[in-house]
Image (cartoon, rainbow, N blue to C red):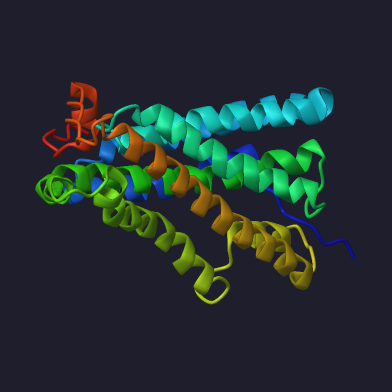
Length: 276
């Protein structure tokens, strides 16, 4: 008897668009101002995944390990730009975010490969690297967003500590710790309940591919541990860099950079009407 993963064909993939229609209908009826964004996101996801699948096919067949690491590097750059938007207003937000994502991703992935925990084949490096970069991006974005909010709302308290003779690092340390905690909590909570509330993606994929559940569990344990490390490293690096950028050589808190109209439109209060 042959057991294996039943992969939907393109017709069945198209049929699954009915689920997008359900979500769009709910957004429209409830006037959430998300109908257009939801449809665009669904179409964009489909196009991007098809394009990425075609590129990865070439990478796996012809580029080998150098191509795989090059692809991971590209993911880090893109993730840094996305995470940097969450810290819009902080000096050098995108560069700081990219450094954070890179630190968390390179150290974590490098450790896994160096210790032989994961194979160094391109087919393994790319998906594992993608999971690590994604976790690092989320942690970096959360940390920078919290730092930006604290630098705005807690400015009087920070300046009061500075006036009492505290160094810039000491004055900002409570907010740095708060940002780190905010970035780490989602990963910690997910790790606590893994397997109890839902079966995570790596484990689910292996089980669907007819891999023994105990084997899938071993792989998932490694995934959860690597995400904890990537999250912690990716949150720590940008908070340290942002701390330095927020103070001048005289330990004075610098003004935040005014967000651009595009940033304000993306992350400011919603004021658009839904024409969908």
